[in-house]
Length: 235
Length: 288
Image 1 (tube, rainbow over the protein chains, first blue to last red):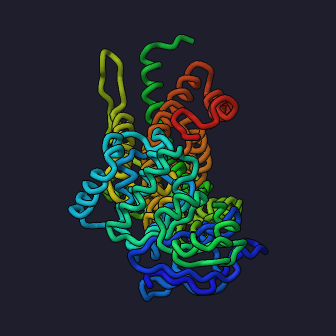
Image 2 (image 1 turned 180 degrees about the vertical axis):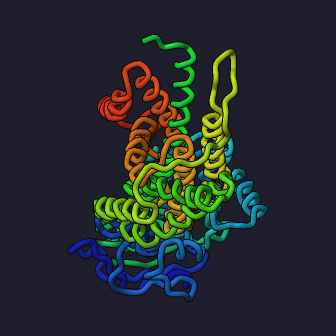
């Protein structure tokens, strides 16, 4: 397993947001966490990269225990987290945003190669490389935040609601991008409200309900179970 | 009283020169506030300590003035590193505690410098003696040198933030803290860097101020206030804003003092703060 979460518990103040969830992500797969508001999807991602206060359980990445490490150390191991709400550097140019994405890569030649590759996959960003990030459209901003994460050549990419606030056409575009990333051999852990998008790209699926795992399994099998379809997927 | 063109030009040059020292203190304040979310109330005292280190080296030990300024800049940057590690870093994100701690720090630094150097007004030697004349008007050389030094340092800082890996990381950290964290940027390294750089710049500001005006252990209080004014005028976190705000403040004070007496020059910054907070709270170049 590339990522293994065991009995993870997170508390904000007195409220228990995650009540002991376990999630496994195999190398090379796309895994999705589904569930309503407050189910703990984003919190799970934030716990992985050290942004949420963990008070129980363990997180293992590539045979190493990472819970309790500071965020920048976890990122250094090859995990990139595309935060909810994009978290761009609004007054920096598109190119500068991407350069900061390659902060940990000290080899300038490799950074240049990655950048060329990124521009090949995101021609829109190349056209707008000198524009300030805040002047991009919502879809372009989402592309930039994913591209910035890819500048770090991650092994595991955490995506938090990449379709949020986007038009249907843009959502299809994002789905294509996620598939493309997967084909490049990057493992993806995806959090989505948009169930259709998530199921279209994911191999494995976890259904979260108020801080616990309600069901999990291969996407295809879950789709075949009528009970799950009705109760959780609304299909 | 007649005010001649010579008076006006002199006054503008003086204003730019004052403004240059304001810019040097304001840059550190605005960057520290942007990245650490801490208003460094002892930053004026860092400026003062910088000036006294130059005094110690140059006046008391005969070191060349310019060399003394460089040494003071480095020494004060190291002082900044220590202050950051011991006092500021633990207070990041603790609401208002930093006000007490940094205010206390400013009192401690004032008293310490007063104990070491005793009270009384001191002066540094001139940066470059004499004056030159342009179109029949005399302009003092040292003031021009001071303005040039301030602008060159600002330019150097701007290039650092725009073109280097650590500079970009600092800019990013000021614009989105978590976003920067997720690129693997170590926030502690960033806050150490920003306080060290800000303190070094303030030290040069203090030295320029001290060589043109006087220096005493309490000079930091007023300088700090100018720095805060400049942030309000220029906009938080903006370097062009700090430069324009600082120079504008210096010149406006100087001209007002020329026409209406020096008391007006003291009131002006406070009036400006009120006007900007009422009508343009993000300042000239600030972000929302």
